[in-house]
Length: 185
Image 1 (cartoon, rainbow, N blue to C red):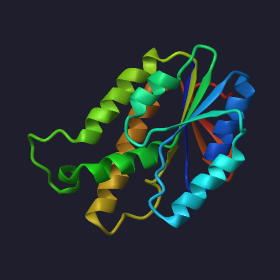
Image 2 (spheres, one colour):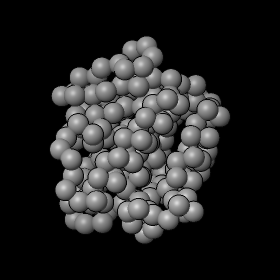
Image 3 (cartoon, rainbow, N blue to C red):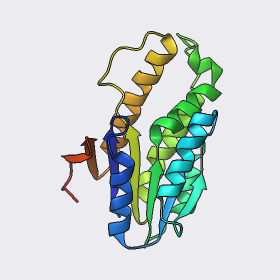
Image 4 (cartoon, rainbow, N blue to C red):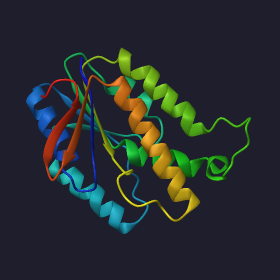
């Protein structure tokens, strides 16, 4: 079993690299999609991703319960792509109104933190190969809004935590992969 986190900016080639790795794996492939079509533009993005994938790949939609979807999808001879952690975090943050208040009460453990803990606890026990895709959002400007800053900060923490739990971490820029951790694939 190998776990890999593929990071990069928007349209950097992250998903394409994940798909190439899954094809090279040679076994059955499951894609766990975390996006929700909240508007026409996002629906078009989701449709484009669906059209680009091989038709025989299995797809699970898991906007919230990612750990549960991974447990369901992971097989010893299989490969699972999670696309993407950043949208999953966005889904979690927007469903927990207390998390959106700054500062939130000290006795409140955000729901997204429980989901993240479940993901990190689940990863080492999964059979097969797992490829997690996430956006690197910390390289740009500081967001103007409190919600934007919370999202940027939590996405950075999420990426650090997942990267520590993965065997390999790859950064993609302009379609070119750079291995940050582990051996190049």
